[in-house]
Image: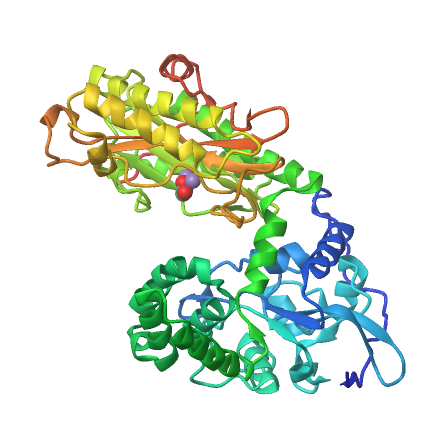
Length: 540
Ligand code: GLY
Ligand code: MN
Ligand code: MN
């Protein structure tokens, strides 16, 4: 394969003013090890290409706080924008005989930009602190001479095309544009059509039925697929069930169409999902910390809560506790919903001024060095559950207990949801809120579990549970005002969400520091809080 790298980065010692930083970040060896693990999963003669996350504008000249793409962070530890990573399945050789198996292009150092907007690692810092053998400035990517067509597979995520072209000639916009030119990415490339073709190509006859269902789904996403002659052929042949000649014709046609491109828009996510589903010890240390500090935040709020509090203030107390422990961010926008607001599953306005005697649903998670918790507690703002609140709470609690007990190695990913849904349905029937189990979805409209890690809804395979996986178990019951039931239930919303480590020793409740049962919550709410004596001047 012909590859010319016409430059090699000089290895300068990094000159940056000394900074005191936390010492518990993932190490460069971790990221390097993950790149090796990634390569081990790559098909032969392939290259994977990943981009950093875009910078998002908030208003005028203010951007949202930058957050790296979790895959990019996992593989590199580089947390700045405007970067591109190339991983090769096997070592590549330059004309002068140098070999390399990865390339990273990063933001160039720039004294003025750094004075205004923060330090940059640059090429030298990337080599010195992130363990790359070489690194290059983004501006050098355009001239990179690699014949991407010579690879059997080119793994990348489909482009979202939702980033700005700035005055910087090597921003993400320019990197993507250059990459598209290098690989000959057609402007009308239809990824869903390619996915459909790949399905047709790779489906054994006995699974044709499954594929028809998937193709129907693709066609709903992109109606033009229903008019595609090859897909039409395949669907027609598959529906009658025995038309081998038409099936073969469709397969030959899609083989020819697919051979035009070496793009693989699914392989990258498949590999990342496999790698990220189970956590290494270094990751577990950070994830556990994120979860513990989130649970402690819940406890501190229980101690501080009183009927005069606002949703915003509750949010502030949680987030202060995380920051006190050094968490950089929230893993997702904090949800604090009093009463009926709790029925909005991802309620983030958090602007009710007084909580009164309502239940408060608090779904919050600290992000610590990239890893995020996801813990929900629902508590009565006045410290005591009413009989109706308690009745609903107990059903959700029992559903959660059943879900946690089902979170064991080897169980299907759906196991916690299956048992939790059954408990919720039985409970709602026993209270007369529904008549049949099939109606339960009205009050429990979401899934019970998802993976947890660098993303709150983390990547994973959805296969049978493996040891060292972290999931949430989060049943809920939500009865919005106006529901078709006795108004005494209206405005009651309960979610209980805990973070569970699936281990060979059984499920481990990582968020145990947050009181969970009715009794434990009511007891915690009687404890004194340092905020009891915190007062601020009244404003006019
Ligand atoms: N906090 C979002 C969720 O529970 O999935
Ligand atoms: Mn969750
Ligand atoms: Mn949550």
